[in-house]
Image 1 (cartoon, one colour):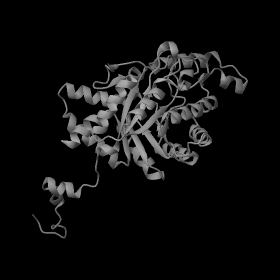
Image 2 (spheres, one colour; image 1 turned 90 degrees about the vertical axis):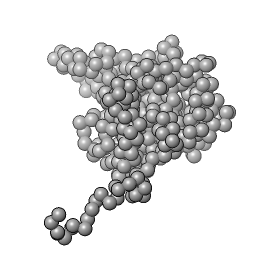
Image 3 (spheres, helix red, strand yellow; image 1 turned 180 degrees about the vertical axis):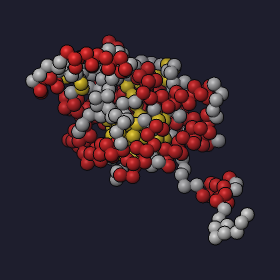
Image 4 (cartoon, helix red, strand yellow; image 1 turned 135 degrees about the vertical axis):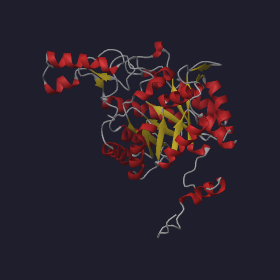
Length: 365
């Protein structure tokens, strides 16, 4: 080797063996970094497999308690509940979300009564409770009422043509969207019910403007000043959510959610603005969702906000890894742990992942 001013530098010295690699590592992962997602429905002795998400199940409250006891024994310290509503109990406004005996509230009480020592988080939204599968009560014709004009025949034809690319159901009625302000009032009510049932943290996921502020005000007014908010501040209209719709039985019955969830073509500036607005309204933590395709967004948000940033490795990410592993194309453990470290390296304080139980087992091995 030719002698030069930098010949003494050998970058490989800190990679020579496992001991020195561990000593030099700047990113760590532990079970305490993970949030366990759980799908719950009313009933008894239910542990129903979710076909598109191998290893995941829908649980009745009694079985959820047993599952969480097992998770706690593995060192996992937080879970998030997603409620499933029977089709006959769904309506246009999601009134079942306000039933104090619904699956989420019942499970929360059962977990608390059982003394399971885990942080209880609840997903706060209406898509799992509405008959149309959207994230709140709908408002039809709002845009045309504001403008005082009817859309032209050409404009209506364009909307119909676009519906073919949406891939979910039919085109929505003209100008129909989720009624933002009506929805946040209902979210505030739902949040208080969850807190009363035992939730430690409320996680609004519907991407409604000013939901965080409405929830914070409602919780404080009800005496729950100590309950925290983990806002899904940065949630994209993503194709990676497919398997979740089977798991939660909540697909949109028409159109999609692109007029309220974020557009992946936008830069990180919009994501940072969304997160900072939620922090100003009282969010104690923020979330970026999905995870792996949005590492740049995660890094930008975590660097910009003065609160911890969570990330959600969503159902499609999980299902792809499971499918590739089942086919023998990847080393599942190695690729999952590498991915988790990429989230931590990009700034995630915690990770919501369907791999939580397996990761905890791998880390203890």
